[in-house]
Length: 260
Ligand SMILES: O=C(O)CCC(=O)C(=O)O
Image (cartoon, rainbow, N blue to C red; front, side, top):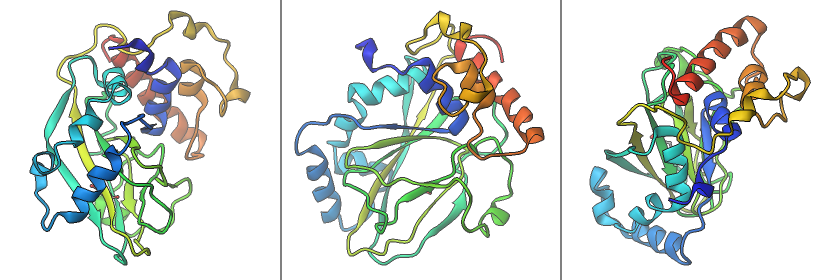
């Protein structure tokens, strides 16, 4: 595995803070189109057997850019879990409510998360997945969350063909209505850590912790300390922010191989 595909300190810190990371792997020419054509032709949803129906999906998961992100966040011995799902959003179908796939327990560990692969370009009218960066540490009953409408800071995953979006298991997300004439394909995968880190599994620079603290650089910082301390994607209040900061720091220490 070429180290150049591993994430940087800043990218790992951004994942902890925002709860997502996008990878745009340079896949072999024609691969996305071939996968999309096979999905278009399926007459039923094979559930977990989607990778048997479309074995080329493994080429996406095996791409070094995809593996590099997975190793960085889940360790060298991460596992692709057996559960996966093809989300085919039919033309002119409605939205999906906000929800979380995980347990929303303000997790101080990063042991499992989703990878959402889109084999075609996703335009705003095609029913993109919509995520709310920074919500992964927030508790909200699902039935209440389902009534929320437009949430400040939401990001529609309007992405180019081949994108894999890694999303924290507790990140709030939903789907916009598909107002187009096209099927919107997304394959959801689940990944799991099998072994705790004894040291960072990404491109860690031990000197990155020595960068001066700079509150004013909070939106542009590239070093982990400034990102973990100051980034505030939801623009939450100071009282919320310091609680969140403590969880972020435990996440970071855990990934660094220290006991959280
Ligand atoms: O289809 C989508 O865009 C999102 C699906 C989803 O929310 C889920 O699988 O939990």
